Length: 319
Ligand SMILES: [Zn+2]
Image 1 (tube, protein in one colour):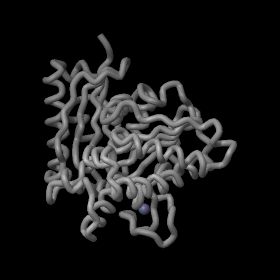
Image 2 (cartoon, protein in one colour):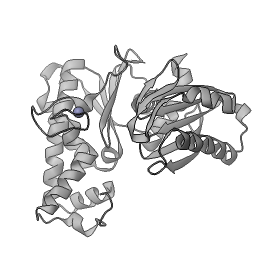
Image 3 (cartoon, protein in one colour):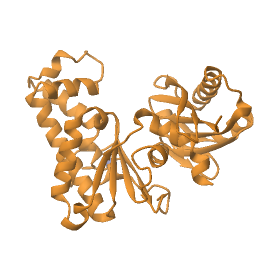
């Protein structure tokens, strides 16, 4: 026996829903649904409800056996009222998810953001276990981070602390989705790396990655890894450049926050050792001697499940 909760990671392209044993961190069953085409509040709510029912039936559990439901949303949220204030990637605004889902399932519902839940997951059952001062940095479409201070997540004055993707690394540099210029995520996110590769190919550069790319489809992490393994010049050059920028961001975090550990997560970090190793190697050189002499780095350990595990633990964390 154990205690079970449902954790949901509501991202811009997919909803991952899992039934989690909150005492062991074990994922009993999970379901992934795409959100690409079905945006807007009604469709998203419908998909969440369907996913919860499916995950319950797959684990042969009744909703009464569930402690609570936790959701992490890629967007701006009101933690106290359980409202999604604005999630542009999901085409949702002012959506009271807590109220809707509590009515539907008669269980307590907690809302967090996507980086927060992934950090909580790693803190309880991943690379941050037994650590009290660390930063979790997730490199994906964008770059986000969760700051853990004395075992608690630092939310900041307006609840937006940790926006490391918008740390400015190049004044007047590349435009960023936030409306600014020269932000870290315009240089070192998975999306930025993809754009660089596609841009170079359009200009006529030759690369091994052309053998794997399917016209009109995004570049997969596995394609980048294969090209690196084949010592492809273009992909290596672009990854080296992205590592330099990411390392500048990491060095700034080390100097400014002096953490004991930096956890790096996201598909690219997980699958491409070269990117991980190169970034931390340069970060150690770029940061100040005292904070960098003790700094440890680790890869996130829970992979895709860090978010759903953390979401399921939201109640435990906030109590
Ligand atoms: Zn930005």
